[in-house]
Length: 311
Ligand code: ZN
Image (tube, rainbow, N blue to C red; front, top):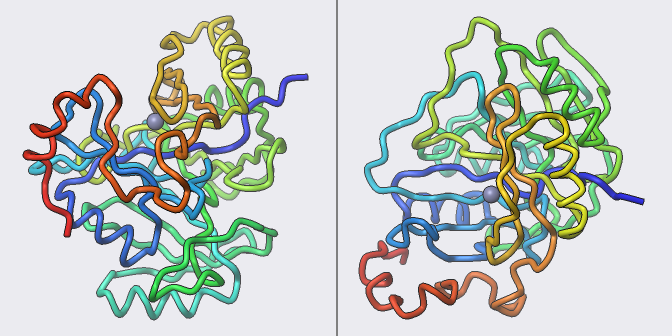
């Protein structure tokens, strides 16, 4: 029997300054840099993968930092918020920490048994930290300043802003294995019952909203997990049957990918769990070296010469 979609695999966004991006996510938020590589289509640009200790799917936020990139516009047809899960007693720690790093934040109480801290990254990307009553067994990456009990565990949910929501909702429920579990005003919450973590998507319906423009400080795409390549091909076939244009299976070194645009305009990817980030580094050394795919290795010296310094 097919195991289907298993929640969020990763989310990819666009940043400006590479060093500023690297420092914010590894230092302030305390995520682990689990892979440092380059944009395969533009090897003079980094591709950072930030996640938990093991670099597990459902914890991975990736960035293309492009120096001088224009600022994007947040709006319909985009992932407009990315949320991390924390334990309920971690809220005071994070409020104090964001204050200490001069990160402006709102501490609003969520309407669904949640306490939510909302803030922006240095490029204006909207993030949330959510304390909730659900059980989340994932262990966050501990740093000098952040003990593992308070660390970000991985994604809690993502919010998609759409002009209308029903056709996207049908895709989630009919093909992706999500169920509608709540609604509040123009927000509709869907949960994937195949897995316990990173399994929530909120669709916000904003019919009069301007469409977003993908550039600095905005999300480029959201990827959903499947167990393996066989599951990916099953999912791809279902999408093609429903009339979606999808890419072939593409090799991204750390997973295989299929991309398509969902009806509301958000770029979706389906990504396999294997082989994962330990395919070219040990778990202990994840993120410690610049990793290049084989066909770029002959150009390593030139590539390293143009990449910005991080330390
Ligand atoms: Zn991706």
